[in-house]
Image (cartoon, rainbow, N blue to C red; front, side, top):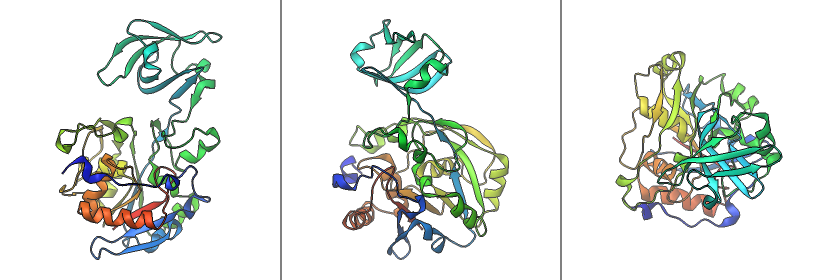
Length: 328
């Protein structure tokens, strides 16, 4: 397999800039792996297609406002090492030279000294004030992906209705389609469980090598409670909501046990799924690791291409605020 196997052309107008309203009115493309049948519907009809009594598993991580924008300077915090030391992507990089201090805001006396630079350009910064200081608050922004225009009025739309613990740098977007009402209705016939995986930038990092086996996934922290583990071990089948949820479940496998750790699992076609039976997901970027995971579940690159050709021809909306897909 080559990186080029996962490329496709997407018309720019199909990249969603705003979510569907209400959330569950997004379109839903249903793909049955046994029959290879494609069905076009709406997300509010999801239950029509779910396996009887399948356990629905959600990722409840909440997105942090980890993008700090100052006058001509951006600091995207990727990891907090201690209250005054962070790792971050910065713009412009030429300002953040090793052992030099950058004034972020004179009035608030905010500054950052670069104490290390990694090979991928991430800076380790020593801040003049703790990262959770009130002085930073007016500069915090929601870390929308680059293909969505920065619009803080959409900040609430970029959180799932069940988001709880802060920690993600990007939303677990498959869950954005659910409303409280829909979840309440689903829970009457389907057990609903939650786990936490804090989505890092590594999930979305571009694959830079044409040989997939040479790509190294960044790790992401997760937590699965003992109660959830027991419930999953009793499940008749498991429907993961989002690739992040699936990655945790496949990392742990059956029988599930309470766990807190990190995963760098990289799922590509040929992978033997051990835990998940179905997946709710969005439509993903070309050449992305998420697209490779979907190809693995669908069963082949050719079939993935057929599904995506249908989605594009049918004008489904793509990426974070786009439409949904159910793979059975």
